[in-house]
Image 1 (tube, rainbow, N blue to C red):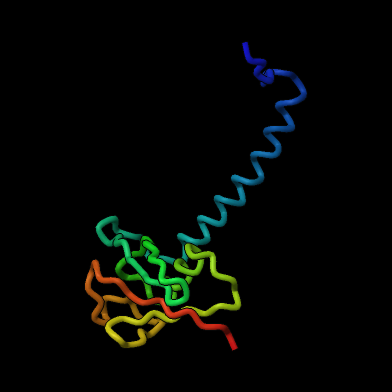
Image 2: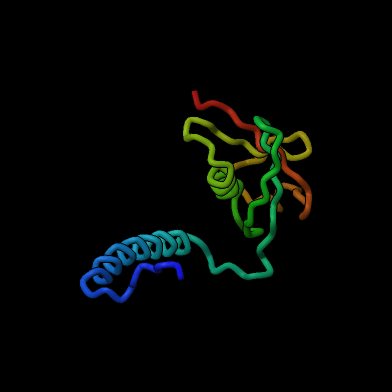
Length: 123
């Protein structure tokens, strides 16, 4: 048989626990901080937005809420596309640059439509 490392060894599993815990704590507080700044999200409010990155031509699907401002969407997209911080994203739709401080919907975006994510270098 294959030798499985024996998890029940005393002394060992204490340290294992120690290592697992702080990480999940950080996760939780991060997540909570994330949730706090937002109104309660209604599940029906969740949409998948497809954004095409100008730089690579790749499409990214990000989960956003209809009430998310373009700025929030850009933040999620930058994260999803793992863009370096010196890159800046602007969202364009139907040839118009969208305003960062308003939700997509207000600006005429239709659910299901692809938006263009234009990637710039920060000055």
